Length: 260
Image (cartoon, rainbow, N blue to C red):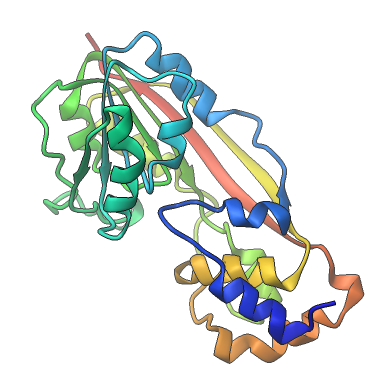
């Protein structure tokens, strides 16, 4: 059986590209949300002629959708992801456009000009956005009259469980930023048709899976580093009663329509 250092090395060297967490499938289990975001997007895409996927990552979700609009475009702001998405999406006839990232929605002050979308007004009948920041005014601008915006977002306190497990003091935050997203979207002239909040549980079965996850999302746990927390992880590995390690993930979904 692999020892602690071997499992840590496995988690630190396992492949990761785009936004593909499939390596974790053998090392963790996640309960599904009460809504199926890809299915909701596909249902909307069946009646749309044009579609924009914001923050496509490596194009993983978009490439697997059950339906896409005849004219579909993807954007991505993280430069290393752009060629990954291109290799996956261009053979499907989907261009990938590198854009400047919008600052995190809770940090927007209404005066910044970042996060602009390089498309004409009213270009898309459907705009979808999974876990990507957005300028609501830009979303409203590129939506066609009668078009739909659907987004699933990571809510506050998403990684608090792991922070506490590692002895890290997590930042104080409000319970949710859904209300802020609602204000931003309605301020951009869209009418909200649906919102939902939910939690999902992820269980990590071994230290390799946990280290892999922490490596990929280290920016979401302030102060985490493998070097600094190796001995705490070693103690966790040695405690049979600690497994599976569970984290509660917090998400919300928002659907809005641009008036005709």
